[in-house]
Length: 164
Image (cartoon, rainbow, N blue to C red; front, side, top):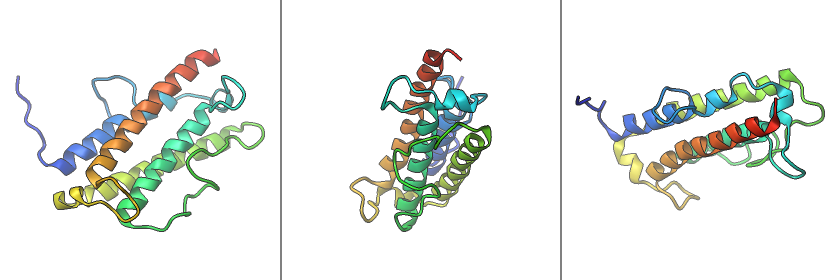
């Protein structure tokens, strides 16, 4: 059986981003699927002192969706909705479901912004290296899709280790 591609590098990039985040794919669980049904207490569980938890990984992936979108659009640094960058300690204090859900919604919102940004690119944009970067837009977008899957695997392991 031969299935035709939807064509074009932009559509392939969008497809890779969507499969890594929330669409059905051959590899199994995607990032959003790995977070589905996780309660705040489990998201806050740490495998050891100084180790990241599921919550921090979710916010970290949100941060990099923001960072890639900002690089492509040429936005200013320091505008991430949460204080800090890259790895942000979560939760601050006792874990509350409302706070966890808000951070998950931020992840979804930033994913949608990234999809919108990539969808608006032209194929000639993909070879450009944005100011302040050393990587082409093509490689950066492929990288953020791989980043989601990398952390999805970590989340799956943390969920199993947590014993919830």
